[in-house]
Image 1 (cartoon, rainbow, N blue to C red):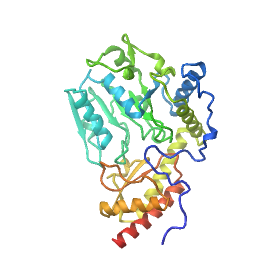
Image 2: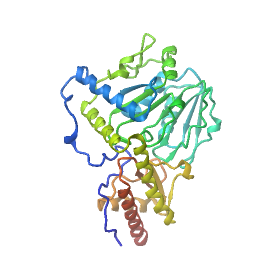
Image 3: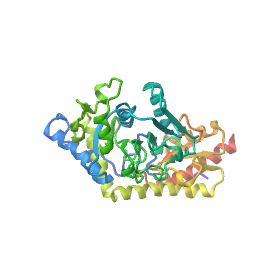
Length: 373
């Protein structure tokens, strides 16, 4: 039987992700629109975005936070091109984006002392193989595999290398151990459901020391430059962006941060996301034809929830099309490089009741497709 209840919000895309519940464009504070981002109001608005980020996430006072171009990708590339090369590198990957960073390090930066520690979709590499003398580049959450890092026990507190963490589908949904992370990057359009094109770059004092003591052998385009005459460009971390930001996107980000505060801050967001995973888990436990792509519950992502089903790739595509036609679930197909299946965004802006409803519809679609094909 076709379910009688539909999700109130059928948007389950893993990026850009669903807007917060009750989102309304008219609620945005847009006094900075039409003004220069270099004006007093422009700088004040950008600084507010930085300050609110630090406060909600609990970023240490001696870390720096900057708004940078080109989403999370831009922030990661900026960090890699500016910091890598001083030490050997361990780059970890278990899905497509970690693989992209490994490829860029080896094929674009052409660095020689690089170890690529990889694992198949659904699993993690052996973190015990990471050398604390090396710089390490990794994603905290595998957006396209549904596999997250369970903890930071494998990162040495006495490490000599830097830890560069792409946390774009983890921040605001998972607890990040700041003392173990030297560079953290993310984008607004993931867990907060913000707008695209802007990235966040968070640097520890150790990362700043590397920037001021090491100069890469390759030229850096202006859009990547974090130092001038061997000194950190402090303005970047005070709202003086490298290039012109969209103040409308900034207003949207501030709206999302205000919503985070209204649901209990970081802890509230984490609980909301974990409730979404619980809704999926409850359904999976009751049906033997659907499984998590992650091989272990301890590493199963609570944001990018990836599932496999006992059906052919063609049948899975038909299921996805059926759900979209019924207007109950948009953009839930697995990433193009991942094994065929489903990917449901479970970040904090998604309601667990909508996830639970979606799972019932997925069951209906599976039965419909497998009984007629």
